[in-house]
Length: 385
Image (tube, rainbow, N blue to C red; front, side, top):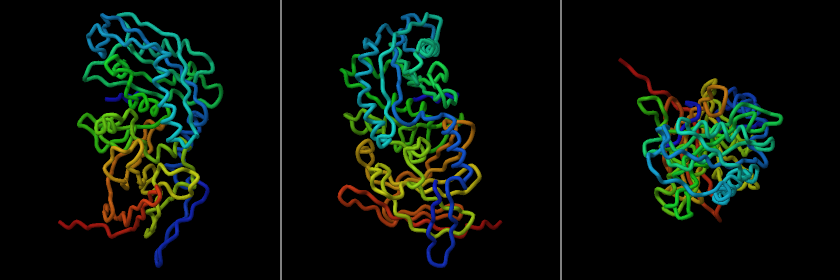
């Protein structure tokens, strides 16, 4: 289980159907989207271009008092340079999902060591303190694996920064136990955990279908890297990457532009057909990637089409997904992203609180996957008694 470290639009016109009215809105007109933009701006160019990361191995004493670690003599034998080589597919993963707009670059840093009374957090602080001015984030891998009931790692974007944003200054960091890099993987390490934690360092939050009794998110959304990141390899044993992530994360990272978004406002009646392109469609193909349905000052619904291919090949079918997004706090990690319906197929409908989403068709022609959906206002159910 992953650890949440914080326990951490140019104007678009929505064409109305005959006899109905709809409101033209841009992202600047939607308070929640504007807040997402402002939060992203506070981190400068963190999600764009080349992003230099330093990879550091932390040596854990055999008799450590930190209870997060499995009490065993076994230790990871990889050097930081060898881990950097293991991370080569991670570079490709993020280049792929950012459509070439973001590229992490990993380099080997100097090992650090903690005493038997120090903790994994001290590993990270030591690595940050020794990092150079050109490094924008550190990834620390402990040479001991965590206990079976402990979280796998964590990630944080650090503090906001727009100029000279070294990791030493911002404290931007990722930490992982050594479990994914032990010898028993025979050189074929799973990479979904480190991709998930880099997602947090890009200021992405978890998503979930629900929350546990303690109020913590459940890692149960197989559509999202930031939830059930191991879902692909749980179904396809050869998979090593996590799934893709949600359209709202791609938008917050500026990997989707305003032109890829269509906005509907529930303050007026809606009856609109939308042609959706799958979110993994190359950006050279113009079209809508997701819909935002505004229904509150700080909240909205998103509707997107996720193709069951590539990093999402573990999904049974291409599917339309609906999430509720609530913008809270002062960073993207604080956003709440709840699955409303994650597997809508041809002919499926979702209706609640006066809104209906109808999947009219999902088609694939020459590798281009599209969905036609209809979104309309309906009468709210009245309750008598």
